[in-house]
Image (tube, rainbow, N blue to C red; front, top):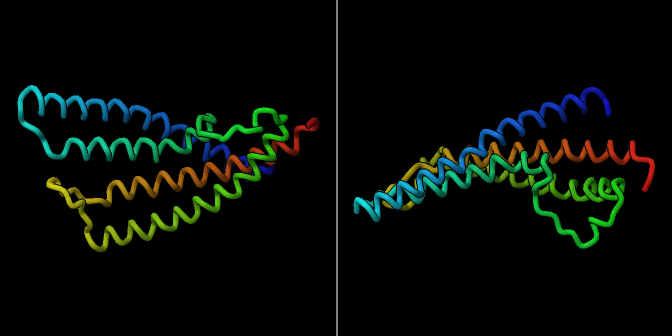
Length: 170
């Protein structure tokens, strides 16, 4: 692998690992919010209208920002009809081939998230609920999460090409 590509892969990996490890703790924040919802609704009988939407925003940020990290740790979902029976080189070939489609999908999704965020900011879009929060914070996190996944998908493509090149058997 060339020095530039290797530097790119190492940089993207380190960013996605750091973001993923920080975001992992978001589940505790979401648990706190849901426990607060239970307490305010059922114990002190004072329901707060923003709690459930905050939990939804938290879980959305959790899975979007954690996407690149799950790709690094290989914790994403994979259809395993015959993948498990392939050699390491065969798996790398399959992953490189499917990465092309993933990258195409993420580029389209990234473009859509940019235009969606622009529209949200221009129109000062809010949710149509009693709390009526602005939508731009979650759409910004969505954009960042999709960008991280796109960069990580490209890095994984390069890693798979390197595996194909270096693995002589299979």
